[in-house]
Image (cartoon, rainbow, N blue to C red; front, side):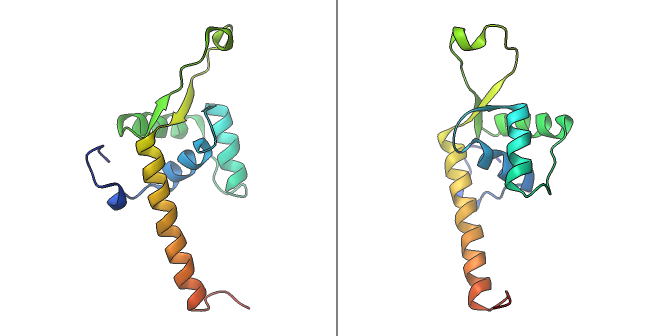
Length: 115
């Protein structure tokens, strides 16, 4: 996923989607992201440190997130890295949410769910 690609054409891996969604309301450190993904998936997606930090590295390289710069007061004694969604990441997340919403609307029209 390169920054020059058309945002509407980019598809997110499930882990990437959940990480970006976890960052949508503010910056978080790795443990915070892991906890939020677990909560927002109803405990069905557990990101272990190796997979989380690999995904974060890939999201950084793809230009969808950035390390959040903390004030010196916040940094004292805290070695954790914080991550934040950037404008490109927010646009990609929004496009993916719209695709998912369209799919759900189709499923509702086709009465996929029991009434």
